[in-house]
Structure formats: structure tokens, C-alpha cells
Length: 67
Image (cartoon, rainbow, N blue to C red; front, side):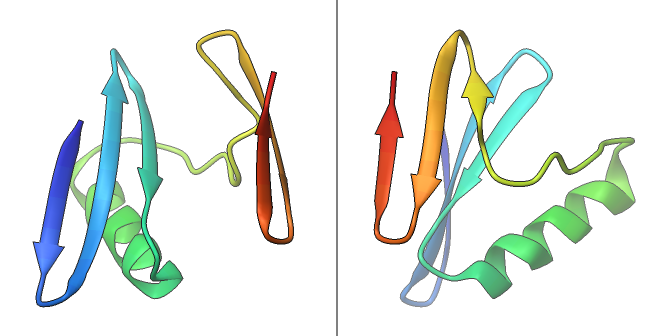
């Protein structure tokens, strides 16, 4: 887990082998971080998290469910 802070904004990046989870309260900061990473590394954006390490993740307005 890594935390990136800039002023009162922050991102949390979870790393497992070659998978990243990027989360934070500001979607513009998340998009900017993704673009920075894509300039430095060969990577793809798979969109909203749906499956990670055998955990199914469902995201709806105002809630996140894991199974």
C-alpha cells in the first residue's frame, strides 16, 4: 500500500505483483495519476474494480460490496 498526498488531497495505491488498485476521493486526481503511470510504464486501465485476488467487487452509487 502506498499513499500519495498533495495538499489536502490523497490517493491510495494498492500493489500486488503487476496489479494496481488506485482509489481516492478525487476522480480527477485518479485520472491524472493513471496518465502519469501510463507515460512511464506499459499498462492498461481496466476501469472500475470488479475482481481482485479472488474477491468479487460490485460498485453501485454510494456503496461497494465484496464477496
